[in-house]
Picture 1: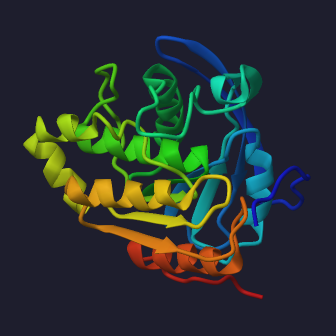
Picture 2: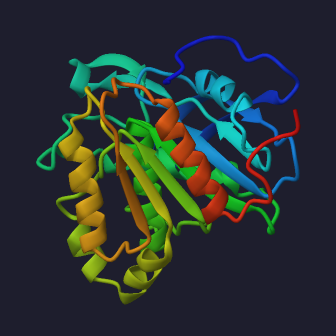
Length: 264
């Protein structure tokens, strides 16, 4: 399911807030934290889709059987989005269209990616780090993966963290028209791409399936060899139990977590 709205209950969640400044100042909403119910082995920032909030996904993760993961669910800034005719909504960047020909909002993507990296920057050194997301959140997760393998944001600032896992649900690959040129300019980027674990899942009625499939094909062709792509039938614009189970199994194996379920 794609949880929309609602109130988080239970002692496992807390709220923080942050403001990111790069070339543009944007006000990010609260980041809701779901504490691990077992030994803390990994921290994952999970990014919502356009128009949603981090609060709704934190409720989802409260009930998920991954007790060794700390989840951070931030909220994107509210901004005018060209895709909706300039109507303002929560969005990690501006968006003209979901197509390879569309012009990417690199400044907006850089600002949001830096905000997300900052949320992970204070985690203990022995904790494995990941970024995942749904819809545009999945797109920003992939953009963060691109920044890691290149070693920097598109504005030239260094990317400061090392990701151990990236997950994208019903999203699409940003910068697909220029990514090949960026990758071919760096041998180090190709080496880092080969080892970065990525899981992409797709079968969405709003974001066409072809966008997810093409995203996976493009990344694999550019050397992202540790990429898994899963498709599902009958999905609306939300997740389903089979997809959630796949994510849990993949994270448990990829991050080598000590357990996949919490005590009853």
